Length: 316
Image (cartoon, rainbow, N blue to C red; front, top):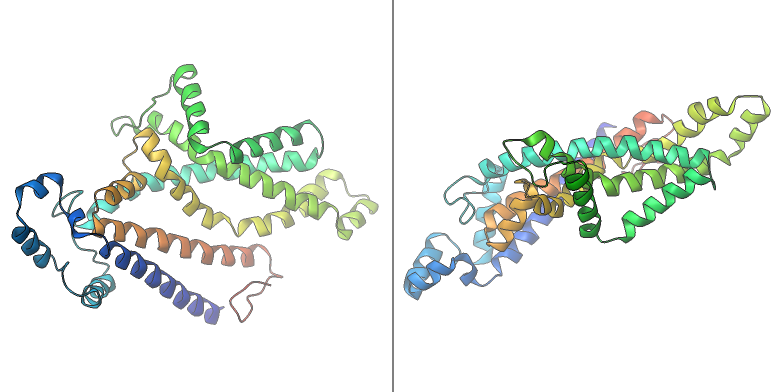
């Protein structure tokens, strides 16, 4: 266990290191004109622009800039924002936005897990009957319809019929968070329902379930004590990683509902070429993804003692 943890930790650090390095190099390959606003482009002459770029270290060779970036990365220092909030620490900006996105993401993940698993259980218990067909239609609809269309339907229903706020507001975060959370949970509910149904149907055909029926166990006991319990083990591996998927989905949801979170910050930083903020956001997303995969493996071991960690870092 300890050996596996150390090995996965080193692999995770290397993966994050590679990701942020690639993003850093790609951002530095952009034309230098992108580092200036339209007003600055018209106001400053070429010599002034060059002096500003030199002062910021953007004209140094890429290896020199990379070394300086790595030195700051060891201290988790991504510098200051150049365009979003000029002169403000990147972490100060990211921290405020991350709190909002994480709150919405955690609530959406909890709702999607509960609703998705319940829907999947109902589908498995009523296989090829009405509830199974309803769940299948929902899953196909969510996965086939473009997100903006499904978000528009949620907005129309929530704003016009339920009279909920159509845009997020810091002054009224509770009610104004309902529609963004609902949209964030839509896809995850479908995924949890799909995989719960699949795993439960697979478990129900195994020999030990047939033996339990022959012994006279009730269908309820078999469903809860055996089928659902064993079907949840592979599903649990994806729970931590699903948080990243939820936060990734917030890129569009936050734009759609004007939520001042990580999604809005990321897109603004890219559009305005605030490279330091982009690198801070990428580092955070990459770290969450790696942590999610690692926690998924650990959660599977806790739920099923039969699963051991193989020497290659995989579960068996």
